Image (cartoon, rainbow, N blue to C red):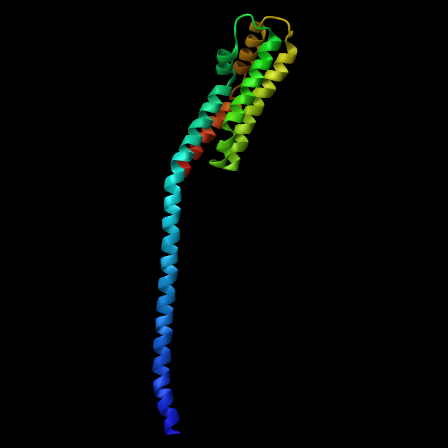
Length: 173
């Protein structure tokens, strides 16, 4: 019986020391793992920040370029007909969109949907208003109709998209 008590006297402190060391090491390893994870996140954020900033800049430029007044200034040429202007405007919007489509990787899906709505509004406005104009007439007619449409709108989707870009850029940086 004395031998059993001696074994217990030696075993219990050893087990307690082992358990204390185990929990200390386990906690230390977990903290080290969390620290490494945090460092990796910071490194990733450092490298992705310039890309996200560039995406916000490019999407802002995209919105400016597809706004109807800017689009008309850039695309309209003397001697164009309404039909030619319509095709040129729609093509310009589509090319701008395709040029910037990869930026959706760096922005929220909600912002990307707003960007697509802005593009759709420009395309729909061009299509609907161009249907009312004589395709063979001078492009001045369609230009005037599109500018009147813009002036009648309180807020264009492009303007809302620009505000959404600014808001998201301010909150995610």
